[in-house]
Length: 274
Image (cartoon, rainbow, N blue to C red; front, side, top):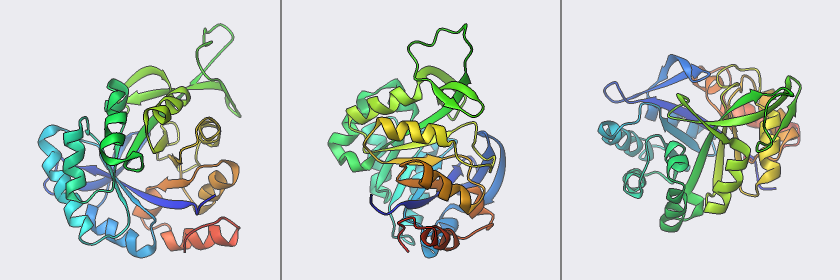
């Protein structure tokens, strides 16, 4: 396996002038975290392998704000930048690529128009097309008809995972693990896999979810949602085959630096780029 990657995530609220980074819990309870390009530069200097920007208030009117954020960041930061949120066409993607992004991440548009995955892969290469999957546990009982779902046994009970779109505001009935295999077939080069149940809770990643998706696909998977301390990153690397761990809170509020996390992982035998 290649070196595992540590990726800080910047959730950007562009409803305010210039934009700001925020962090929520289970996609709610938003809290201010900082200025996008200033945080990104700090993470770059600490040794981030990549940086993800997610426009959580995406709309056509705010697209120019995001491109300005990416331009300012790309002048200061020299690791790959992934941008997601509100990208629904190749034209939308072109704007963020022109601003300095290396990859685009799509979620809602991918589910509503799966052909967009293939289009982006064809225009920009599979390595530039990331599909984000926001997954929510749906626990089952013996009376439910779930023959068409992939069931995962967890310490809390058996469940399947449902895809959500529009920033977690709408559920689709789509099985997240099955969807992961489909996006791979359509040309996605990477999956950004977020557990909605774990998001912002700081009690560890959803290992069962990460493990199952990695078993089903060959493309890289980024684990997201639940990181509260460096040991959680070690756990998801040690217990699943994810190629990267995405985190926000522990870096935004300076609980730990990226360098501290990497040094700990290296001492524990995880192949990491120092």
